Image: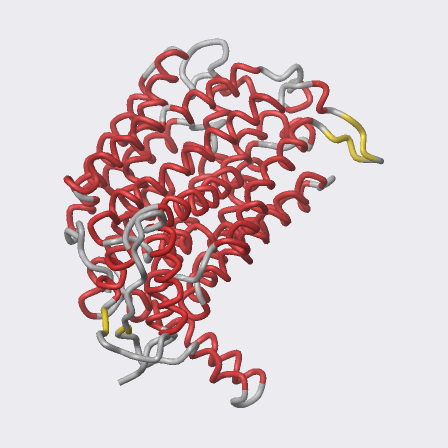
Length: 504
């Protein structure tokens, strides 16, 4: 019998038993704040592009197709980064990967503000997206592996609400900064418009998140147990216990852990085997193993179902959401978002200045409308379950998008957009909970990273479709979004119920 950190092994606990011994309290609330801020920083970086489009398109002389490429660039990076970082997190540890991916996100997101050419802006946004693609799936794997079984659904729902906080922060910064003339100055040969300052400010949350993880957060105890690192796992449980039981006069109970017999990382084997080419082929082959496992045996049906759902919701949400500010600029003088396509005929005949503040005010209102949906998710997740919330919210989201196309006034468009924002966030929160509960620890980050990558492909396609058709046949992408949301809601009925299940 392996010995524990204290030199004796009077009893040996499973992960769930050790989690109960560690208690629930201050540590978990601190974890929620740090992981939540990281989630919010990802939202800021992803959504900031939508708010700079109305002004950046004039400064960089962008067509609607160019704007579609710009919004798609970060999702292309997220597609690349999602699975790679997720796989590395399953092999090397969650916390280390979060620090690196958040740093990549913040550094290259900030550098994008100084890009004088459109192609360079696209490149920097792509690299920033690689960082975002790693942090989003790994954050939820990391966070869920600290949660007691009976509180997991509620706490993951609470973590998901920080995406709303990032959305509100991005919308608020856009409202405060982009319309301001004082934020316009020259930096050498670069005309530093207000939207560039907005991009700089949007990179700060990611950098501060990376610092918080580096200084404060331990590795996931579930990952450490799976990696056979018993002493380190017990140390994390001790840290959790001491923070949670502070002031209660309790001492940490001595125990051992049932850990996996696998080593610290199977990638180590590739360091000394064969030529560089053979080692690379071996790494790539091992990198595909989690995907094969996801689509075999009992996991196959749920993996196919989640693939369809991720595609439908990502195409729809990001395709529509990233274009909301642009669509609202088109209804500034009244009418349907798809009725005023003539407003954007040719670039040299239009002016982006003075900036229409109402566009950013409306974006802020839509962002705030996430709040009721987030509160509803937190209150109902444990009693209703993620599957039911996911199905219902996708169907209602589909109806709201269809009505956005049908309405004829600016006020009606705003109201229905707020309804879409409120209800669609329930679907995302439910998907975050369901996704973490349906896969074992050795596949969790890889699976979430893979599905996030599928979602990024869908988001790219959604933005390209909007960019190509928004001026010529606006009804097609809007009605397509409605149809895909309905499809996702119906397919979600095939998912197994995972409410309050133990993590494997």
